[in-house]
Length: 54
Image (cartoon, rainbow, N blue to C red):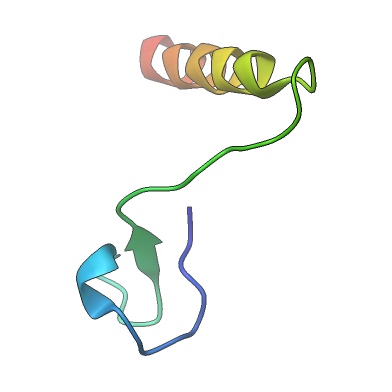
């Protein structure tokens, strides 16, 4: 995930080779029960595998 353009908490961001881009070290997915959080994680994992094996 791309970090917002905020200068506070720089230890929570990863610098990339492009100085305009910073990545987040972690993110949180939250919501009500049965709102699709697990399916979102499964879909992201599927896309990751699809990209890595294609």
